[in-house]
Structures are given as C-alpha cells and as structure tokens.
Image 1 (tube, rainbow, N blue to C red):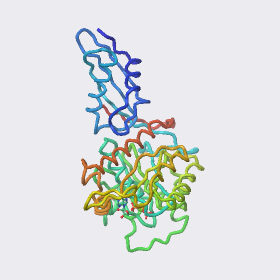
Image 2 (spheres, rainbow, N blue to C red):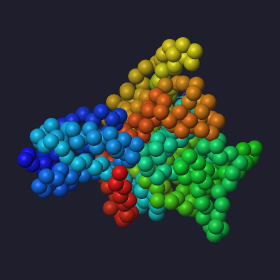
Image 3 (cartoon, protein in one colour):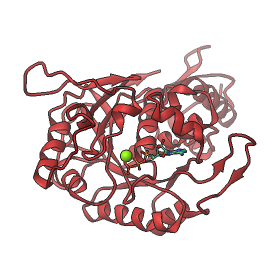
Image 4 (cartoon, protein in one colour):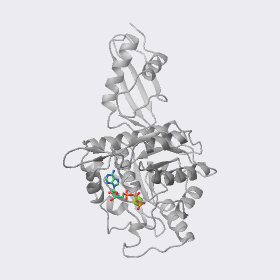
Length: 362
Ligand SMILES: Nc1ncnc2c1ncn2[C@@H]1O[C@H](COP(=O)(O)OP(=O)(O)OP(=O)(O)O)[C@@H](O)[C@H]1O
Ligand SMILES: [Mg+2]
C-alpha cells in the first residue's frame, strides 16, 4: 500500500495551482495519520486564512492531488483554518479581542474606500471569519448607511464602553452613530484623535479575526492617530486607474511604509466601466494604474473591480453587493480580493505578544 507522508503531501499540494481564486498553500501546515489496515490515511491541512465557503471543494480537490501524487487510492482530507494575530507596527500590541486590524486607505477621496471596505468585510464573513468594521471617517462616515444602520446608536452597558452594532453578521462602530448627519463635524486634531481612539479602544469587539478600518481620504489627523496608536497588521490601498488618483494613492502608501505598517496590497477600483444596457466594457479612467502602483512598490495587486452601477445602488442602499447578490460575478471579485488579502496576512510575521488563537475545523 503506498505511503502517505507529511513530506509527500506538502510537496504535492505546493506544486499544484489551486483552482480556487486566491488560495495559496505555501504556508499550509500538514498533519497525517497514516492508514492502518484497510482504513484511509487521514490528512489535515491547516491554512491561516478563512475558507469556510470552499472547505469541502478544496478538500475534494486536494484529495485528488494527494492520491495522484502518492498512488494512494483514497485519502480522507480535512481542511482546517486558523487566523492568528500578526505583527503590528512599533511597540504597539494587538487589541484584546481583535487578532488583526486592517486599514483601508487611499490618499484620494471618492475612489471607493468605504464601498470596498464594507464588501471586503462581508466577503471575509462569508469565508467564515469574525469581522468588524470601524468607520474612522470622522468627517464623513459612510458605514451606517452602507450597512443599513442609519439612525441607530450603540449601547453602553457600563457607561464606559460601547457594544458594537451588528449588520449582516459584521460588528460595527462609527462616529456616524454618535453625531447626527446634520451636525457639521468641525473637530480639530486632538478631538479627532480622542474620538478615533474611543471608537477603537472602548468598543467591546467580540473575538474578531479581522477589524476593517475605513479611513477618510488624505494623510491627515486620522491617519496620524491611527498609525501612532492603533495596532495595525496592514493597510490595503485603494486606487482608481488614472494618474491623478495614483499620485495620491502613492502618497498614502508611502505614509504607511514610513511608519512601518505593512502594505498588504493595492485594489484597483472602477477599472473598467460595464454598461448596464449592453454589457460593453470601457476603460473610462485608463488601464494598468493599479498594476503600476503595485509593481513600483513591490506589493501585490489584490484585485480589480469594475465601475458598475449595481455596486453603487446596492452598497449605498444598505445591502452591499456581497450580500445582495452573493453568487454574482461582482461578489466573486470581492471574495477573491478578500482571500488575497487574508493570504497576505497569513504570510506576514506573527505577533508573539500573546493573543490566543481560535481554531475552526470544517
Ligand atoms: N466599483 C464601483 N462601481 C460603481 N460605483 C462605485 C464603485 N465603487 C464605489 N462606487 C460609488 O462611488 C461613490 C464613492 O465611493 P465611496 O464612498 O466608497 O468612496 P470613498 O473613497 O470612501 O470616498 P470618501 O473619500 O468620501 O470617503 C459611492 O457612491 C459608491 O457607491
Ligand atoms: Mg469613505
């Protein structure tokens, strides 16, 4: 009977291109209980990013790969995942209850940071992760509206901390819950810092794998506070393809690099326009900008999203695309970008300052 060993399974799965968008098995951990008598060998493959949405297909696929590499007629493959806390900048330590904080940023306004942030949060949730959204746009919060939570307020049980609100399975807090949208927010630097720190540190985030922070445009007070006091695993830079947006996105990217926050990659939003009437695709804002930005800085292009009216309608009406059309082609793009982001995080150095990991076996 052919032997199924850890080494031959590792070699087999690493040599294979996995046909599931963005899945990467380079750092997968393999455990094997060899076959006894007529039983199948049991192979457990553990990855560092959530795969609840594809665990069964992935296990079937890998079972085929392992059988053909080892000559075994059948193996019993289980795919497990475990999101761990990864290293943060400087001397900061991860927040209790939050394994990884990801900033979604761009130097420029209106490029789709909030839209991408909320759809990525929902995509990671669909992949099985526990996710939160922190809307750090003190001057123009978007998440209450995008998550259908307008007019609601987080409660405080002890007068000191907030319970996050919840929408579509995601925990949420936003300054938008605390000031009404008629109040012009004319806060100055120290107030911005205080408000942001309060949202980040006094929200009772419950056991999050990822907290997605939706930043305002620019490289001002909020960005400064965030990079000085909030422990970030990394930043995702959103850009549109045209040169003007790229200039600002580049500035945003450099800001994170300067303060030693890992740039996980670039997302190019509004890359081609898809006509609702005829499906014709047109690169309204030029092509290749996201790729150029990622090449120049040696970071991955995590994905590209079209300029599509459905994204705008769905997200601005409180039921973002990943939830309103979960099996559509646009949701598939967000899921692939979420996977690529989670894979980048899984590959990053670990934090060893003591957050206990959660293990999920699918
Ligand atoms: N790929 C897309 N296709 C169509 N519409 C989009 C897309 N991405 C974002 N939008 C729309 O563009 C507008 C601006 O997007 P969004 O608010 O996410 O940008 P932002 O970068 O967060 O802006 P701000 O800098 O003001 O925070 C929104 O109305 C949103 O619905
Ligand atoms: Mg925004």
